[in-house]
Amino acid sequence: YIFNGYYLGDTKYYNSDGTSAKKWDKTTNETLTAKWTSSAVKTPIPTRTGYHYMGWSTSKSGTGEIAGDYTPTQDITLYAIWQDNIKPSGTIVANPSNWTNGNVIITATGEDNGSGLKKLEILNEKGTVVASTINKTLSYTDTSEGIEQYTARITDNAGNQYTVSTTDYIDRV
Image 1 (spheres, helix red, strand yellow):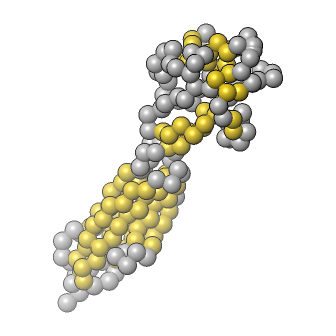
Image 2 (image 1 turned 45 degrees about the vertical axis):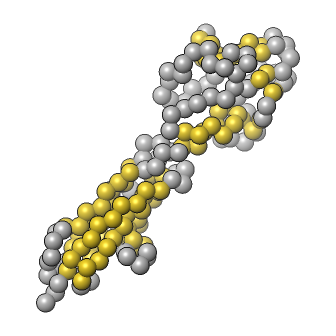
């Protein structure tokens, strides 16, 4: 077979040598079709903002990975395997944020626009997780006394993490 390129419908995106034939203008996962007449197919190395290209696969789940030139024996769809490399984001706030003689509510938020939010945690200054959720918002009530620092640790489904901290002040005297 001779490889003619990768197409989305009738639009050619990659040439037979793996170079771009057209700038990638899609923001969602799309299936490209390899077109050939005979011989081995040279797989291109695509790029996608916010993601690291891991290779090609014969399945959407990433199993059946192929490398280098590929000689198809039948019509087949190849899937690009991507890994999200954008860290999640979030906030943490102590309320009230100044000295108080009552409890302080620590509220953390998290979000991820890549692989999705996996876990949102609030840790005390010793590094102990005091609250955890898979949701985008989490609260914890600090009933201790003194100055305490809390950290929100936000983890996405690709394993990327982001941390942000706040301090509360409680004087029960």
